[in-house]
Image (cartoon, rainbow, N blue to C red):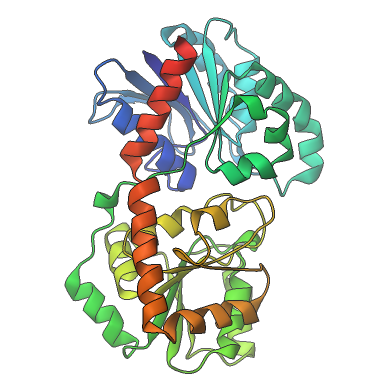
Length: 374
C-alpha cells in the first residue's frame, strides 16, 4: 500500500495540522504493508530528504503565504512527476494549493482521501472563487475524514457528502510532552502557588484571548492566567491588560518551548480554550492538557468540534463563546468543589486514553485505506 500525504507544510514547521500529518506518517510507516511519503511546501528551502524512519519528504519552494495559502506552483509539477508511485493520495485541508495541484494532474488511477481539518472561515470573498475547485475535489474524493462527528454535522460542505465522511479524532504522542519536576515547582513558586489557568495558541482573532483576559475581572487574586504563544494581536491584548489593571492576574509567556510545555500543563490547575469561531475545529491543546488529567474550560462554538472534544460535565465545562463572565463562573465551579474537580480531572484523562491516542488515530486511517482499496 503506497500512500502520499499531501499538505501545506511539514515539521520542522509547527502547527496542529503539521503535527497530525507527521504522526500519521510516522506510525503508518511502522506497518509492514505500508509505504507512506510526504509532499509539502517549504518557506525556506527545496529538496527531497529521507526521514529517520526511511520515508521521503519532498518539499517544494513556497513563494509566500497569502490568505493562509502557501503559493508553490512547483508542487503541481512534482505531483505530476511522482503521482503514479502511489495508490492513495491523502490531502490535508484547508489547502487550496494542494487542491489545485490535484486538479491539474491525472489522478484517475489513485484513490483520494480528504482530511478535513476545518472549513475555510475567514476569507469569505476568496472562498466564493475557490468553492468550485473545492466542490470538484469533494466529488472526486473516495473518502473524507473529519476530526469529530460534530464537524460533519456542522459543516455545510461536509453535509452534502455525508455518505463519504468518517470521523477519526486527532490523537497525539504523549511521549513528546514530558514534565520536569524542577520546572513544575519553579512555575508554581513563581506564581506564589496561585490557581493557574493556562491557555496556549497564536494570538489571533479566532482564539478569543481578549475574553479570557476580561474573565480576570471576575476572579479573585488567588487566580493567575498564563497565556503562551505569540501573534499579531500581542500588543493590543497587552494594552487591554494594562487598561483594565490586570497585570497581576494575567501574564504573557511568549513562545513556550517544546521541552517546557509538559511542565506548564502539569503545573496548571485548569486549561482554557476560549476560541470564538469554527476556525477552531478541534483544539489539539485540549487533548494535550487532558493527557495530564487537567479539567478543560472551552467554548460551545456553532459548527465546531471543540465542545465534542471537551465533553461537558465529563472532562470539564463548556460555555458560550465571547462570554468572559461565564468563563469566570466555570473556573470558580471547578475550583470551589474538590469532588467536582476530581471528577472532571479523572474524566479528562479517561476521555484522552479512550479517544485521543495517536496510534488509535493512525490505525483508523489505515483501516480507511484498506476499505477504499478493496
